[in-house]
Length: 264
Image (tube, rainbow, N blue to C red; front, side, top):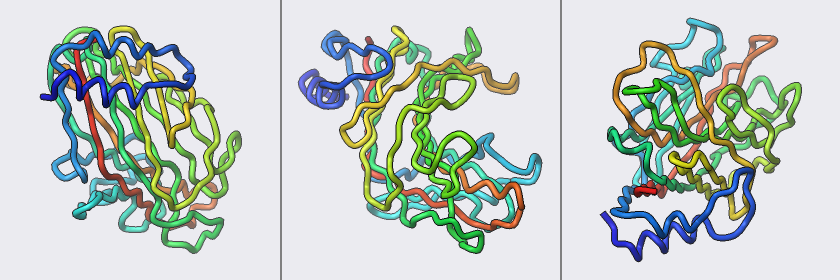
């Protein structure tokens, strides 16, 4: 637990100024009670799970992803065996609490690529995206997944609609273009805020505000019956299509994460 002054200091620094896609009122932070802050230098203790951005269907397994921890950061890896596949590593912190949908959440972290993707099919390091999000699964009532996420397209060939460096936001059904950021190997800061009770969001990367969207996503019937929040830091390895010759691992480093929530 942290005191009210610390909450306002952290929340205000995260939310002051700028314009986002949805109106997010920092005054909401002043109304918060019993704020809670959890944080860490690396992702040690987080859950590692495969995501749904995989190719070919049925051809990816748990051995294709791995997250390793160093003293000052963690590295989220996808396609660690360097096969002709696209693998999706979701490394996440989970909190189970039936009241979390009534809370105001703020997440921040640093991320970087330890290499530069290049247009070379023979490279053993290449990536598709860097992805990050904050979600709450309401398994007790609506059985919907609520939250926000952004995606940084680092594939050196880009795709049919967006070039390398495109930033996208998740709208619940698909990724939509919200900006552009050059791909490099520098450390970058990211800050995400969601007020689940008011269905508002905010995204800040390197002190620049980008549009973001409050998303509602349908999940498979196999998802559980709890209400749980997930702070997700992810890596998707490069798509080897259409020629199916690329065999490259993807690596993303994350550090100094914070997750704060309080009743909105």
